[in-house]
Image (cartoon, rainbow, N blue to C red; front, side, top):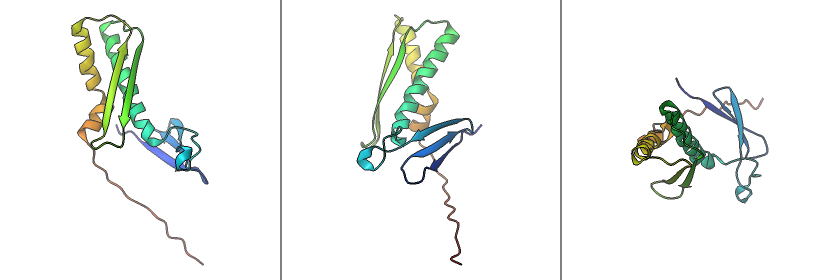
Length: 137
């Protein structure tokens, strides 16, 4: 199953109306410092957000299958988008007391998050621009 996203520019702004899999909408924008209105996260901000949400979701789903009560789960991602290679620092906090074996297993689950695997594996891009010619007549 392919996942799809479409962005439509909102005229006169740097905002984008983003539709995800035909079911969800969100708005992105750029900070005021680069000409946006800061009316939503920038596209760069969505990448660490997706990684944090993916890891947290994977941990909670795995714990459910094992019947583990994790308490409060939070995942913080600090993304340095200027470094080469890009750098992600991930901090996971779990409110429950866990055994070392449970912590090790959750570490493996976090590392297997699909968003993280996609970033680590690299990507291929197939791009096409359709610029419709308009007659002057």
